[in-house]
Image (cartoon, rainbow, N blue to C red; front, side):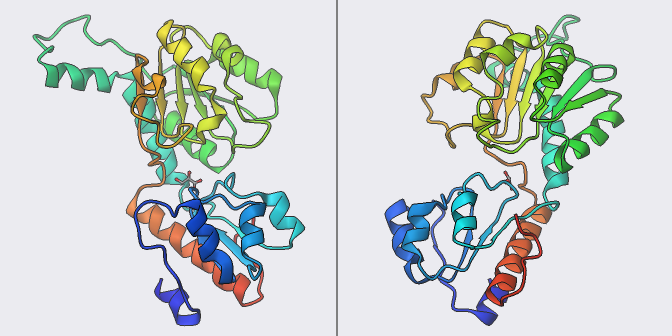
Length: 292
Ligand code: DGY
């Protein structure tokens, strides 16, 4: 904020909740630069409402909230924040894998609900990570960081690209844990639907720290309820947040956390820095250091 204010007049949305759409459209009217979050949709309507806009800096690495065809058409540069949230997101992915594999949520419920009565040789048995196969969909920066961590746990790592249907089928059939690390695009929306879930190994675990719409949640709910897959651990959902009465939340063996992949002090600070670097550069007529 200080760095921006040193060079520009800055208007800040001061509330914790994102600006309502009408308010956002009104506020961008006079703006030349926009530093936005993944909760702000930047599309033709918003760009029409912001005729002076010269730069969009998204404080996220994912840019599915920005209509890139529109910004390109209007020659408005868009920047994102790659690299700085790789480790935090990979750490959270391992936390979700471990939580699902070792049934931490059920264990906590037992302890709090008085259901834990004695040490039980058959109680809460889970998946041992050493020797288990981790299938990574999307081997970009975060996928590779997850692979390095998983190797440290003795997992066998396989991967496929997001546009490799044969590779995905093989990966789904052989993996004990499937972890999603691809961006949300038209091609990856519902990539994990009924068909993909049916191809997963019985009892396997699905982890999503990428974007909610990559998974068809109705199909996931059915697969969990039928015991078709063992568990799912999601940092991202569609929509976010899920309404408290969303049927997915009633599915068994499901852990949902509130999109906290990048929520470390280090990562969020560096994301803010990169977003500001992008915005200041573009407003000064220089190329963004991290353009999309
Ligand atoms: C991103 O940067 O795209 C992440 O989802 C934010 O946590």
